[in-house]
Image 1: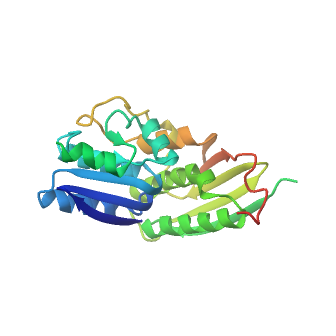
Image 2: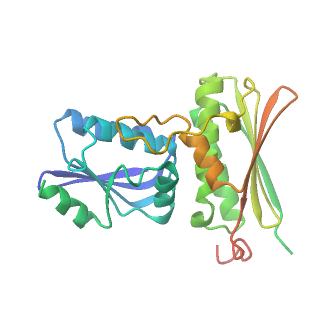
Image 3: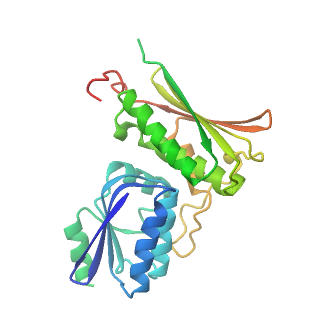
Length: 113
Length: 150
């Protein structure tokens, strides 16, 4: 798994490429935690390059959302493929998170926040 | 005639063992012409079960082992996972609360819930002092019939 980071108008974008599972979720957790610790408060996680996510990855998202106060104005997820969306659905995660179709829409949602 | 194939890997019951299992499954998948998008459910289930075994039953005990067998027969992919940890039936775990808010959410139990949901069959048995777990997933009809196309 790789993480490509960029910053757009104060929004930190984390584009994840590969699988998010028990062998890779630590890397994602560390990257997001480091940014939160550094004071970053608006995040987009882009799932366009993600092949699948297991509960280890869901746990990281839950932890990050909690640390950001559960706010939909702080964390937006985007570009969920079929596999990721299905796991979110089964886990009951779809209603918990702000989800957009594209990175542009996700950033736009936070840029105005 | 439907393709039949079988492959077993003997792994350390550690995090690096999980990585080896993923590599072995990638190889098995590619050899049998299965697309990643057709078998990701098995990847997720494999990760859930192995991380449970390594994290809970073995707690990274360095001498612990796990045997994983991938088999393709009759249009189904079957994964058999055997470990010698203490008896643990993941199917006996209570279902997680899927309706709680972010603040009230507890991640426990989510992995096994995903396994049950994504697989067409899951069976557990305790035999000869070992845990045996069989995961079964039916493949799309078109899958794996043409090795050349991958």
